Image 1 (cartoon, rainbow, N blue to C red):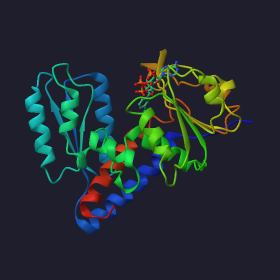
Image 2: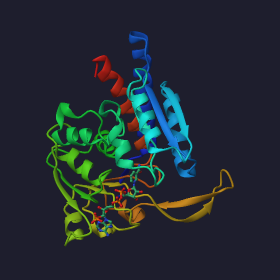
Image 3: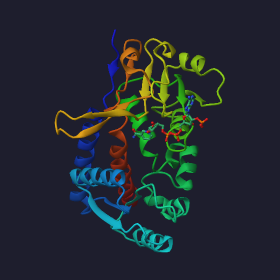
Image 4: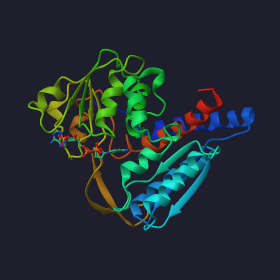
Amino acid sequence: MSATLIKGTEIREEILEEITAEVAEIKEKHGVVPGLVTILIGENPASMSYVTLKIKTAHRVGFTEVQDSQPVDISEEDLLALIDKYNNDESINGILVQLPLPKHIDEKKVLNAIDPDKDVDGFHPVNVGRLMIGGDEVKFPPCTPAGIQEMIVRAGVETSGAEVVVVGRSNIVGKPIANMMLQKGPGANSTVTIVHTRTKDLEGHCKGADILIVAAGVPGLVKPEWIKPGACVIDVGVNRVGEKISEKTGKKIAILKGDVDFDEAKEIAGYITPVPGGVGPMTITMLMKNTLKSLKLKLGIA
Ligand code: NAP
C-alpha cells in the first residue's frame, strides 16, 4: 500500500489563504496590515532568490513589505544601526536579515540585535528560551520546525503519546522540532528521541518511530527497512545530487533528493513528505504566519 503524501505545496496554499483572510479582517477592523522588512546584504544569487520569494509571498497575503538591500561592504556598525531603526519603526512587525552575512560581520551580534518581539525567524536567544518553556510563552517558533509540526497536525497524524525520532540536532531544525513535539499541548505530547552522528544504533531508533523526522542533509540516509510500517515520515533534507534541464523553462535546474529513499519508503510508511514539494514550501509560509502573529500580539488580539 502506498503512503498518503503530505504535500507542502497544498498546505502552503491553505495557510496563505487563511493569512490573507485574516490580514483583510485586521485591516478593516484596525486599519493596519503586518509590515515585514527583508534586509539583504550583497548580491549572493541564492540569497537574492530566497528574498524575492519572501517578498512575493508577503505581497500576496497583503503585507507591507520593505525591501532593504545593502552593499556587501556595509560595516557591522551601520547594519546594527539599520536594525535599530527598524526595531523602533512602528509600521514594522517582522525583521528578517537574510543569511549568510559577509565574513566581516558577526552574524550572532546582528541576529541578537533584532528586537525579540520582531524576530519572526525565531532565532533570537529570547525566543529560543520562550520555545523551551512552551505554552503561551512561545511567540515565534522557528519557521521550518513550525512548518513540520503544522504538516503533521494538518495530515491528522496523532502526536499524543507517539514515539517521535528526530534525526539531526541543528539549532534551526533538529533541536527546536524535538522540543516542540515534547511540549504539553495539542500537536505535541510526544515521547521524543534525538539521534545524530554519535548515536550507536541509528537504525534501531528509527525502527521504533511512529513519527520519523529526518534533518541530516545526507541523501538516502534513512533506508526503507528502517521505517516502521504505517509511520509518518517527514523528510526535511534537501540535497543537490545533480542537474537536469527543466521541461518548462529549458534552463538547468538542480536535481533534489531527500534524506530518505522516497520511492521505497512510500510503500512502507503511512504518511510521507516528498522532496521537493514537502517541507520546503512551509518555511516561508510560517514566516508569514509569525509576522501576522507579531502584529496580532501588538494589537492584543493574538
Ligand atoms: P546541519 O546543521 O548540517 O545538521 C545536520 C544534523 O544531522 C547534525 O546534527 C548531524 O549530526 C546529523 N547527521 C548528519 N549525518 C548524519 C548521519 N550519518 N547519521 C546521523 N546523524 C547525522 O543541517 P540542518 O541545517 O539541520 O539541515 C538538515 C537538512 O535539512 C539539510 O539537507 C538542509 O538543506 C535541510 N533543510 C531544509 C529546510 C527546508 O526545507 N525549508 C530548512 C532547513 C534545512 P552531528 O550533530 O553529530 O554532526
